[in-house]
Image (cartoon, rainbow, N blue to C red; front, side, top):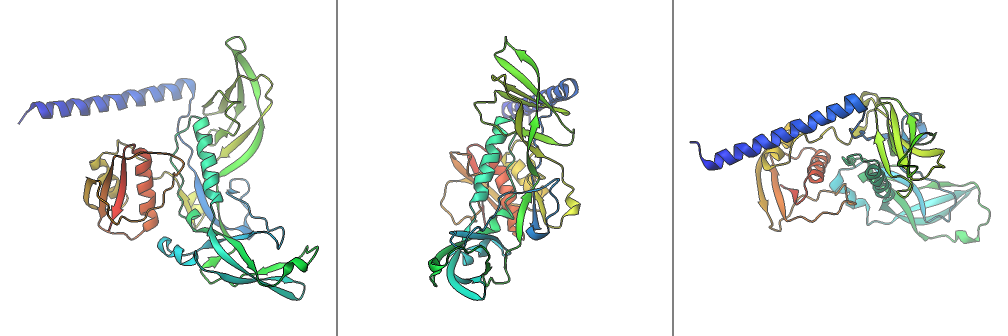
Length: 357
């Protein structure tokens, strides 16, 4: 039956559809006439053996490890090949290792500590996205969540009597789940580019610099906010606007395309991009699109034992008025569920998706 309620709902649906079509039309005009590229570059994370790395042309280490001295508090980083909810079994234990100097062994004790340098680096990249007016889709943390650092907590043997130790090896006695050779890389390269000043605007108040680029590669300006006024990413060039007239080169993050079929362990941040407003029904469809059936979903502020899902975007501060509780038909891949929920929460502003079993 036709009612005023249904009429108002139809009007809202029509208005939303019209707004979307207008936005799509404006984007096509910008792309075709101005060449503006407003798409967000995909960030791939690849788990590789750091001793056999030969992809410098497209990948770089997210963080670097350098053991310079046996007196360093932090030594190597390791990858723990275990299910996410079993990682805590490694965190509160003290292990024994040895510094091997010539023919002598010096015992020390260490713990495995979550490597927070990755989160600091992602926070830095997030703010670069903001400076460049590019939408942030987060990063899949599947591999990063399993990175730990070896932290020395005690020297059993007094190594402080040793002097000028240049050559040494370390024997950690890791279990088979702890891998010293694996670490995640991503498709972000830090480079310097010479820019050409093309014109000044508003009587020299602002200056435009241009850097030519490949159509399949995304450039992000990695400079201080006080230097950059605005950035426009076009198909074949990057436009940088600044109030300074004496800029000759810029630090640029080059984000290139990666063929996923080349690597065995690889993940990408937004293969799960949301293409519609994240309403209750769209959240259900979104889970179903990625092989999960929602058996129950509702708004709730109750305190329940929700699935402990790691927060991938801690740097974005939000205040929620309610949870959206979701129960799924299966939980066969927790890393995939983490990724889906984090993408949903990135697109929600006052509500938070939580999952219970």
